[in-house]
Length: 136
Image (cartoon, rainbow, N blue to C red; front, side, top):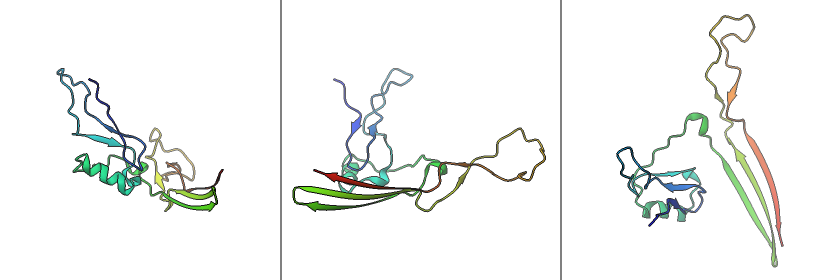
C-alpha cells in the first residue's frame, strides 16, 4: 500500500515526510524521521500542534542568509450582512535587510570607480502589497 508523504499543517503550504524514498542499498527511508516544510514561521497554533503531534523534536533551518527575511502580513475583515470585505497588507523583507552577492568576475584589476565594491544585491528589497477583496 502506497503511503502519502504529504502532511497538512495549518499555515504552511508545502509539508512532506521524506519517508518511503529508495536508498542505494535497496531499502527505503523511514517515515516520521525527517520532515521538510516551506516556512514553519507561518504555522498557526493548530499547525504547531500538528507538528508536535507528528513527533517533530528538532528543527533545522537550512535556508541561507539570502533566503531568510522577515515578512509580515496584516489583515482586517469587515462584515456587511451576508457579504464581507477584507483589507490586507503584506510586507516582504520587512526590515529591508540587504543581502549582497559574492563578488564575481575574473579577479582582474579593471579601471573604474567601483573597484572593490559590491554593486549587486541578491534577493530583493522591501516589497509592500496592499489588497482589497469583496466577498459576495
